[in-house]
Length: 257
Image 1 (cartoon, rainbow, N blue to C red):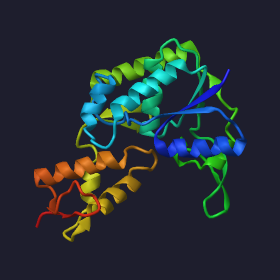
Image 2 (image 1 turned 180 degrees about the horizontal axis):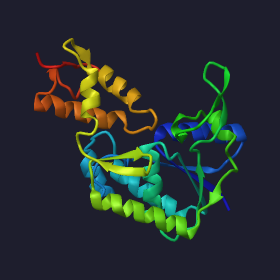
Image 3 (image 1 turned 180 degrees about the vertical axis):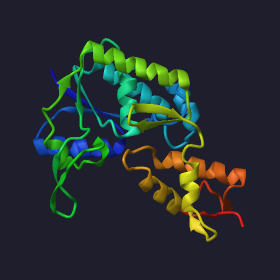
Image 4 (image 1 turned 90 degrees about the horizontal axis):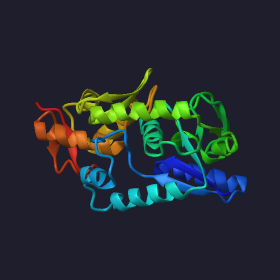
């Protein structure tokens, strides 16, 4: 029976792929590319999520169809996630909802102490892990084999949590001390505006600064969602653009005079 590791996001998948290489394992790896921490989720059909993303260079509908088809076929699935990442915990809850009654295991990295070797060759330790996506492959390799089975009661609880979030159908879902919670469309606007001044700055710099500040103590949002909010703030007149704000690395923005 072959193991299939289930992981949300390309960044986390790249690290886990490296971990499997280090460990000399030929396990399968299945990547969920959607970010369920943002956008409508009342309708979880791949077509509905693709319609919301509206990205010409990303065939997310077929990607999601293929993901769930392969997940249904997996003999021994292991879901990786961290509870302090909105993207990862949203996926974990959605998995429980979608796979209700299915037997599977999880590796929850939240709070784990993980020895790592950083890209510069220096050894270190992540004292309390937030998410799979920020642990290098050599660190994830030390966690292989630490999966645990999910009880029926836990699965039911997580399924109900996701159903509540689906009923809310909020624009964002953020991590709180009490778990994942719904948030309004303007939740990150003040953070973005605080990075702007009366001087011109590149959109990429505004988004990058806000992204960094949104990661402590929880990883709350991705750069694509923040970029969309910048575009909306320009359309509302809260920010002034010099160029097309959809061009993150070519457009400059500032606060109104």
